[in-house]
Image 1: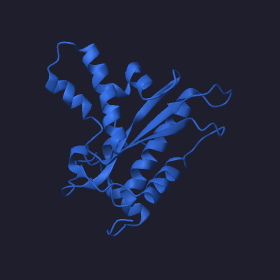
Image 2: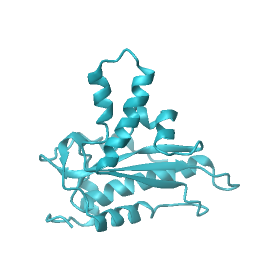
Image 3: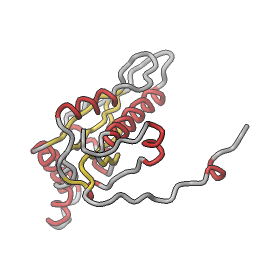
Image 4: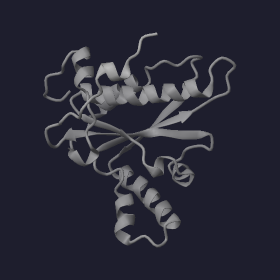
Length: 192
């Protein structure tokens, strides 16, 4: 675990915030920390025990290989784009030292509708973000056009019936984190 004071669970949840991938650097989680993060990612509500999610780990050269797929699809669909734009697409997963793709897969079930299974994948993504934060890392859950493009998803090895819930970027914050304004409870809470 990183050399930082870890707040208790409620304090952690109160202060958690996303860190932009461009504001992250190495080091990323160790292999043992990654196992912890993934174990916590798999510990979410899963009615019917369907395991409607799986993880793809992008670290080291795999981040650039995935970027090559993203850039190739972008270039084929945007043939007039300048080389600089294609290069931006190539670097989509390279800012943070670790990126975890959360894949959502729904299965037919008489009592567990697809929406509930997709929410389970979302819960998994949020647990990954929270676990990384608890270990002292910055984390950010992002999508982007390429998370919804079937050609990119095929290139990353997703099956035809799988979707990407998002990419979780994880690394060491390179500058102090600043919070953003949060909604007042009075604006978002009603009582029935």
